[in-house]
Length: 204
Length: 264
Image (cartoon, rainbow over the protein chains, first blue to last red):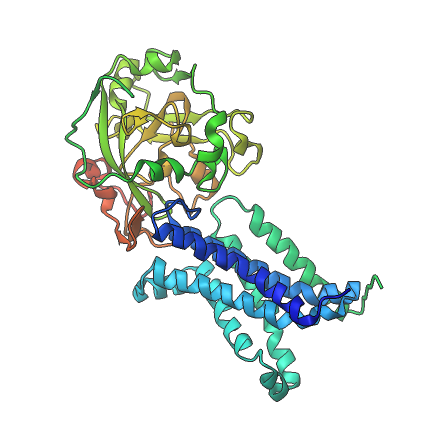
């Protein structure tokens, strides 16, 4: 028996929201003077946590097409917009945390950071480029833009690369996780290059 | 609890101490993992008794000292110091320890000794974080001898009136309050007096980001973030970072005439 698309989507929504719900729950515990998991420096913790989930969802979004083509899971396409929008959601949480909680609208410092520090520049470009993709994710915009829509949304390759570089550059010494992200990105983008060059592979 | 501790020091800050729980659960001690809460979770495997410290180099009384041999001839003091991490957060910690100058004077460095070098334990069984080569183990730090002899420089054996918790660098760690926290090397097993500037671990890992001196300096940014302000743990808004972490009156003369942009 197969679940209807409605329930499948409900499950994906719930899974994608779980990290955020957990974070809000821990934030509530902190606010309520209870034990919580956000460490003694919650803003720094939230910064890393939302950044990590943003990257994971960007990579997951990039994995859908290869998975669909290699394993013949054609229905995956039905979740692509959702995953993309959740990636955008976590990027925005990351950005709001940086600007509001971390720097409390200290625009002089924020702007200086964005201009002077390549790691932050790359992250900010990636976040900004994601905005037009989120805006044009509706059916109406897909129709209106036609072939241009595909071109525009190929920006996600650049965004993914910038996000992973940002991730690598922000880490002090322990590069294990960002390098795993890089490895996954290389596989997912390499797959597309190979396919463009004429190599195809299918398990079905 | 530690006995015979002199409680009031001329160097105490009047700021509110950071809660014990924060001081002992938010740590950079990569020997037990790179997450901030890893040391508190993992450091129970460290055996701190018995503990011995090797003293060598240009010194009159080299040898292997037990922790007790090294500390007990001196009066322990409580010092309420600010601690500024290079990652732009800070705490206020009531350390217990012995001024390093008291220990150095007893060991008797020779005229060739210009620097002092410290080494952390390397033991992959006791320190599971060392199984991955995140840092070129063992962790090494150093000071110029006059910095080490400064009355603010402390060899800490405790905090909040009790022996150091393992995650804070038990049983013996360095505290240099006008420098970034990474200079405060933990779980020390070797003290060497040298004629040449020793390497230090973070400088070796990223020389453009972490210097030998590592004096707190709001004017000299870390390449990836500003050092102009900091978040005091437990506070929401950032506060301005003070030159030499607010200890300029005491220590600025150590660096008179030096270009602090070059010697960061």
